[in-house]
Length: 307
Image (cartoon, rainbow, N blue to C red; front, side, top):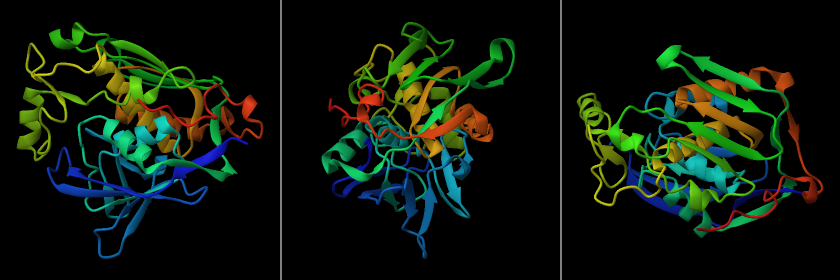
């Protein structure tokens, strides 16, 4: 049986929110089978649980924000991406503020936290959402066109293309494909950092956003070049971060996907729109388990490889 997974022990991190600049403590705890991933605002007078499902997404401007009533948590996508990449099914995330710490701007620190806590199998079948026919969402026309699509595939692969009119981005790879069965999330995707432009950072700060952002947790560019002294971690780091984000956004389905995802100029809003569109078309997917691990896609039965 292909089993569900959780953590062996709890682990903690402290950081700042990229938009709020606020100090935040994060505690990752093991959870029982079929719990899913649940964020818990433990700083409130009465702690509030927010399950990581599509209907919890309340805002997709700048980041993915989830809410339950008046309680919210912003910028969940990097931690959710790490959970998707490592195959974590059940997890409690205790958090002391309304934004996940940005740490180094990628998912690498979350991968380290999860792997250092240890990942264990649970006595319950891993349930996948298997896409059975194509589902697509589109927005805009001409130069403003963007789209995202899910198609049937025995495994999980993602391909993404970006289109930025900027010298630093244009000189890098703007299209990438990643296959969970043959590639390593930890090595190939997790270290890709979020990125932004100085002019956008200045505008965000005027509006009270981006207060915790800087060269230590993002790739920052002026009109011509990358300002980070160390340059890029991957030749195609920009588009790989888009894959990282998409994996986090798609994991808001509440279960791992068996599908091929492809996108052009998509972002958090369109990714969430695709998730909701898939769930609304109940004939486009089904829940599957693998009693015989040999029938599962290659690589899915093993714990994720380290770096």
